Picture 1 (cartoon, rainbow, N blue to C red):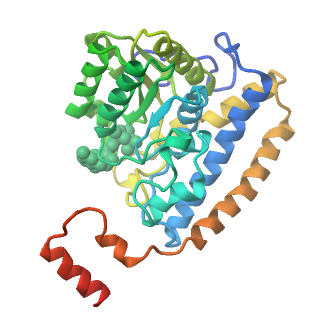
Picture 2 (spheres, rainbow, N blue to C red; picture 1 turned 120 degrees about the horizontal axis):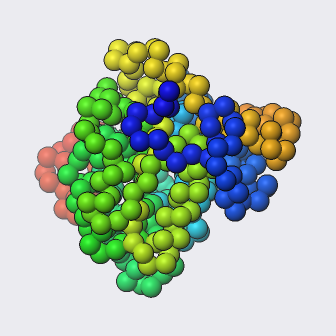
Length: 350
Ligand SMILES: Cc1ncc(C[n+]2csc(CCOP(=O)(O)OP(=O)(O)O)c2C)c(N)n1
Ligand SMILES: [Mg+2]
């Protein structure tokens, strides 16, 4: 049985951990272990974030369990000067880019818009909620890189549901026409809130690239090594002046759309169980251990390390004070309208 509907994606490690392609993707053993370490840390933090929201410490949080390989594999492939344009579900990629987890979570605590981390330092843009709007930013930024003669690219994440937006098509067309060194990275996680992928798109998303004049590739998004390899290839193309690549990473959103959602209302438990067998962490761990790159103690050590780190993140999030109330009124208008001034006086006095 095919693991995903339609065209079989590019894959190097099968869901049972067996190699099914050339697993020499140019990564040293240390790097291979690092991929597992990031995925374990990201999942542990993701679960903690859901607990933090339930405890009232975060306002709302969109989990990414199941998508660790798609995010870690792609972010790990990027060079220091490449720039990521994320959606709201890319915390794992943010961690790989060196974004501070506590600062990232300030967004979900309602402490600051878009995360206070410096996007120029981490080369990881602000969290973007209006779906598909970040695609034009990513493509345009990459056009700027090209004009500057920089050896760098952009990578823009988006979901398969977002690919129905006009903004996707506009950005893809722009990327093709201007041969922008942009990677359009779709995480097809099967669902756009309660709408299944099959109701979003009658065709396969990776195939759309051809119509815009650049290559598209479908990859098993739960195979971290395959994701790394196809992203690396797209980066090399971008660096070589060959233009954009569309990557469709087939994965699955194991949890709810966000903590404000209840997926049991619209999604069959059997489907979730079937997809659990494709888990990205278990498969990579099995391969690492069976190929002798890591011993079983390595994953256990990663889990212990993640446990301690997440406790620090939790403490940091909880210790974050509420921002000054006047910030609600600042920075939108150079000359605030009278209605806003009145609300400011009502809220703050004076
Ligand atoms: C322009 C816009 N319309 C609607 C929404 C509400 N909304 C938030 S997430 C989402 C679905 C996104 O699905 P997908 O692109 O597959 O990403 P996923 O949530 O699966 O990561 C929608 C419709 C939004 N954020 N922005
Ligand atoms: Mg989706």
